[in-house]
Image (cartoon, rainbow over all chains, first blue to last red):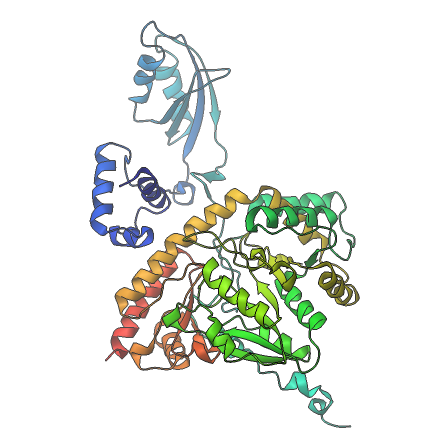
Length: 164
Length: 390
């Protein structure tokens, strides 16, 4: 299967991973067997990492606290930022971690049950790590859009039910 | 006083109400309907286009424009048409911005037709051509097309209908409702027919940018056809801008000048807000347009594949966003099929005969709907067909 077809499969799955192999095969004009094999390969190559739902937790839980923490780090010989990054991303509280250009080095996304919990994590686990120079914590007040999805958008169809 | 009806112009009174209208009322009164009967994109106009309209309003662009439309927009249209369809029009004299492609169709009929002249209208087709011919005093002549020919028009079918009163041929490819397209070779055959009988052509190419297996062939770009053709297009389908009502016509300066006379006395100009949005669409809308097309294409394959699985033969549409499967295997007429499907499975599709008698035995299914809707609707159609198929 060519790369473009694989990319199409990935795009379809990224939008809705609940579509069946048969549906995807029809959509792309491929055989089900081909799609199945391609998806299996993409999973084995860890191109597809997992199949997950995008959830607006604020509708279910009273308090979900998310914070973005800017971390300045002293890079290490031979390993650069990777070693200290690993020390950070191994914590399950850390939902995502990126190396950044600009005013700071690592951007850490943390989720917790309360502001205190998050603040304590930063103070006790993050700020004290060797090679971490400084941290700046920003709490998220409201999420408008994530992964291309607008949270408050009502997907209402305003069109006439039948038109020529 | 006479009854109100007796005051009405009999030409108008005798226009048949659109077959879709009656079905629309049925659908409106049914609950929980998944509608695949919609002739417009399910996408909302891309944000950058909507935003350009707000910005225009903020800067106070709320006035009339030139009758022809904003010169800037006409220049963009002209260069877009030249680049994409390979036919050149002088932007300021051969291009007219209209209120949707529909207005352009009406203007062309009124500017060209003399009472009693005949217009060849290939069917099945969009519902407006025959009534606009009649209202302009002309006589619409149906030319059937057949699934055996992939719903393409043949010169043979045209030769059977042409008379010495024939003036105009309507071409609408990619076609609503069949999704058929016509390739260059087939169109060349039509062009020879047009030349032989000294006809003009109204080419409604509103779905030109929505072809899936190869590029659209513009009729006006064929040798000798530019000055015989009024090319009509717009922004409704390709940029998901139906409600903005912006279309355009390109053609010989004389035709455009006469059409503009009617336009200026009846409409004055297309709304400036829509024109500003259309300008943005042409300047920066390419990538969003392509994104939507990829999605339509996936749905197209899915829908056609499912109909063939279900046992309703569906020829492969190569343009627009409609599938036109045959329902003859069920033994039902198009209207029976649609009414029963609506009542029993709450899925709305449009009976093929709403688009002309040669559409009988078919249904129009719009795949301008989400994959979730299409999946559910086709499962319901499958259950329905299993009950009726002998």
